Structures are given as structure tokens and as C-alpha cells.
Length: 385
Image (tube, rainbow, N blue to C red; front, top):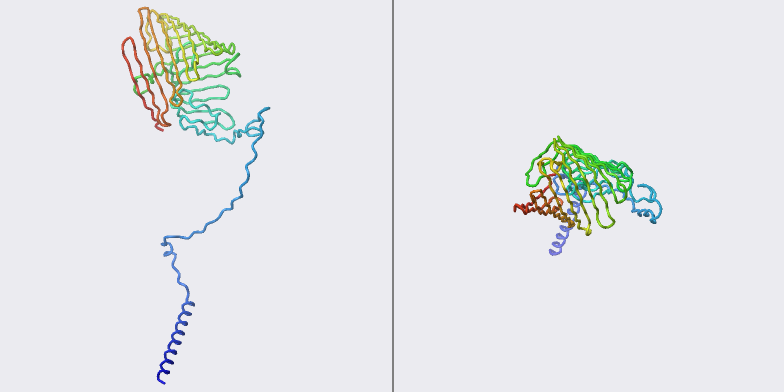
């Protein structure tokens, strides 16, 4: 009897505990949920944010390329069968400022009118091919009709009548006819400024200018092979005038000859010149020039070093070998003689190339055979902008 009462008490206690547990669970379930304040939620290491999903249109096939079979006229840019975009859709700033790299737009102008000047920034007005180019020494303006304007330092134009000189000032060249070269073509060039002696070999830094000077050249194409030109140079107490011509053979190079008369102070002199130039290979150019001067002759090339003598004879042999990305290797031999005998016999080699977009290297060596003097130069140029 006692064992039955004990089992009944244990069962009743178990039922009471279960009912209490169920009542506690119901009270917890019905209790409000705990929430954190915004300040505490802001301290959490991860934060939820709402993300808006943009609607993306399905891909569309590219339009068919414009058909052009290589026959008939080509339409203007931006219309018809032309594959060139319209001019008004082209950015007015040319990004070919990257040194020596090919411009994105061919009509923006060739990079560098003067060899070795690789850093430039070009501006082209939308709708035309007029281009302003900022170089390391000057501003250059060019047009599709052949007009060229240079503001700053630069070399004079190539002429059959004399050596090129450096001037700091203004230079203008333009074609007077539709055709720039060939039969019936007229072209002139004018340069005004001051003689520039800043880039002389062995001279370190600084700007050195001489007296004011000027040069004008007028050329006419008699035929596809023959051209005639006149030249004038002037400086304080000096005037030079001359006439010459150039005849290009078919596949055998070109001959050139000229005669000039100079007057300086009370002295007068004549200069006679003949030369030959030929491209032996695609990468090799050879040239020879003979010059005979009488006493009293002076021009812009020797204006500062002019001396009154009995006349001189000069021969110059030159070879240029193109080495691709390593620039051009120039070799020269110059012989200068007077009535008393040889005055100068000089051999020279030079090379200049861009080792990288930001480093230009120049090499130069010279040897004077009569005096035995020699010189070797190694230069590095690094843009500062």
C-alpha cells in the first residue's frame, strides 16, 4: 500500500512540473521581442543597405559595316560609304601628346617638323584640319593647303643656295598654287628674327642670340623634275641674293647648283655651289657638295665668323643611315682649303634616338685631322613635364 502511494506522488509531481514548464514557455512566447537601439546597431561590424537594381537592356547586334567595293567616289566623312567619322564628332584636343607616339587622328599633323622634337601637344578645331602644335622650342601652325607658321626658335628652310641657320622669331611658308610641288607650282617662305647661337656644340645652357636677320625663298616648279628658286638674306650691313635650281633624275638621285652674291660693308663676294644627292638603299642616303667662295663673301651661316680672305674652297661628303628605332646615324667629312693650303679636314659621327618615351640619348664624335684635335660627347635629355 505504501509503495502505491509513493508512485502516485511521483506521478503527480511530474505532471505539475510539466504544466509549469508549459506555462513558462507560453509566457515567454507571448512576451514582446527585444530590440536594439540605432546607436548600438551602428556599432555592428556589418551594416545592411538597400541596393537598387538598374534595368539593363538586352544586347543588340552591331550594325552591318558600310559596303564599299573600291570603285567610284568616296562620300564625305560621316555619311554614305565613308568609314571616317564626322569632324564634329572628333574631340578638339589631340591626345598624341604622348612623346613620339602616332596620333589618333592622322589629320592632326605629323609628330615633329624638326627631327628629334618628339614632345608636342596638338589642338585641332572641329570641322577642319587646321592644327596648332606645341613643341619644345616653338609653336607650329599648319593648314591643309600647305601653309606653315612657326613662332619661336627653328631652322631656316632648306635651300640649294646655302646652309641652314637657326633663327628665333617668326617663320611663314605657303604655296601660291593648288599643287605644292611639281610643274607650275609656286611656293615662298619668309623668316624674321635673331640669329640663334644657343645650340652650338660644347656650349652649356643659356640662350645666346645674335643680331636681327631675315631670309626669304621663292621657288617655282618648271616641270616634275626641274625646279628653280631665288634666295635673299639680310642682316646688319649685309645683303645676300642668289639664284639656283634642282634637277631630279629618274632613279639616279638629284643634282643642284646655285650662284649667290653678297655685300657686307664695303666688301663684295661671290659663291658658286654644286651638289649631288642619292638614295642608294631604302635606309642609306649619300650626298656631296662643292662650294667655291671669293674673298669678301659672307652669309648668315658664317656671319659671326666672317674674315676677309682671298677666297676658299669647300667639299662636304655626307652619309645618313636609318637605324629604325635607334634613330639615324650621320657621318660627315668636310675639307676646307684656301690659297695657302688646307685649312680644315674634319670627320664626324653623330646619332640621336629615344631610348624610352622619357629619355633621349645623343652621341657625337669629331676628329680634326690637321690639328689632331678630337671630341667625344654623350648627352641625355629628360622631359621635365
